[in-house]
Length: 398
Image (spheres, rainbow, N blue to C red):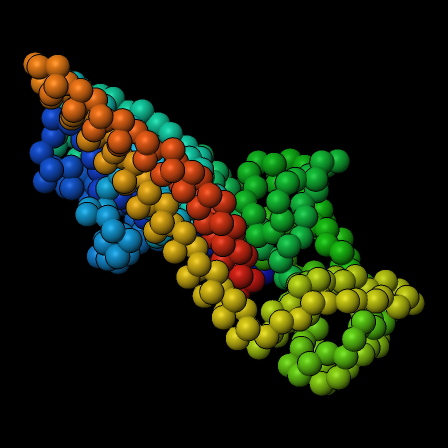
C-alpha cells in the first residue's frame, strides 16, 4: 500500500555532492610585498574552504611535495610550471594567481588547472579599485567565486517555496504533466508546480506513484515509499569461475548476493540492473541487466587490489622521474636563456671582447636544441605514466 510520510527533519542540502580536492599555490605579484601576497593566498584558501564541495590541500604538505621536486617556493610564474606543479600535487584541481598593482588598481590574473591532463580549464582577470584590505576580503571572495564558477553548477536552495522530494528507493524520475524533469530523487521542485500540475514518480520495477497529498504544517519535505511490481526473473552466467568474495548487487543497493568461490552462474534474479562488487578485487565490465526468462552472459575482468596498488605505485614512481627530468631541463633551458641575455647586454667595447662574448653566446645556444629535445621526449612518457597512475587510482576509488 502506498504511503506518504511527512519528514520532520530539515535536510541540510539537496544534493549529496562528492568533495573535490584542490591545491592553491602562493600568489606571485608586482608592486606588492611578499608578505601581503602570502596573506592574500591564505585568504583565498579560506574562501575555497567555505565552498562545501572543496577540500583544500594542507599548505605544509604542498610545500614539502614541491620542495622535494626542487621548487624553492610553492609558487609559479609560468603555465609550464603550473602544469608540472598540478601533476606533482596530485589534487583534482590547482590554482595559481598573479597580482599586479597598476596605479590605484589591483589586477588579479588567476588560473584553474585540471591535474589529470595539466590543462587550464578556467582563466579570469579581476580588477577593481580596492584598498589592500578590500582586496583581502571582498576581492578574494569574488575571485574564488568567479574562478570556480565553471567547475560545477551550484544550486542554492533558500528553502523558500520549495518542496524537497525523497523516495524509497532513491533515483526515481519526476514527470510533471507531460514533461519528465532532468535529474532523479532526491530533488527539489517549486511548491506552486506541485499544487497546480499532476506529479507522477517513476522508477523501473516499481509502480508509478501519483502525488495527491502535499506536505502539511508548512513542511518542505515529501517522503514517498514506492512499491515493487510483480517480480520478473532471469539468470546470469559468468565467462569463467569467480574468485572468493564476489557479491552481486542490485543497482539500487537493496539486494546483495554473496557468490561461492568458483561460481559460474546465479539463478532467479529479479529483472533489473546489477553489478559485481568485492572488497579484495577490482572488477571491470561487471555490470549486467537481467531480463525476464533470459540468461545473461557476463565476462568480468577481475584484478586483486594488492596487484593494482603495486602497479599504481610503479607508474607514480616512473612519472615522478620523468617530471623531475622535465623540470630540470626546463630550468636549465631558462638558465641558458638568462645567461645569453646577460652576456649580450654586457658586450665589451673592443673587437676582441665582443668576439669573445659572441663565442660564449654561441656555446650556450648550441646547448639549447639538445635541452629542447630532452624536454620534448620526457613529456610523452610523463603524461603516459601519469594517465596510467590516474587510471589505477580511479580503479581503487571505484
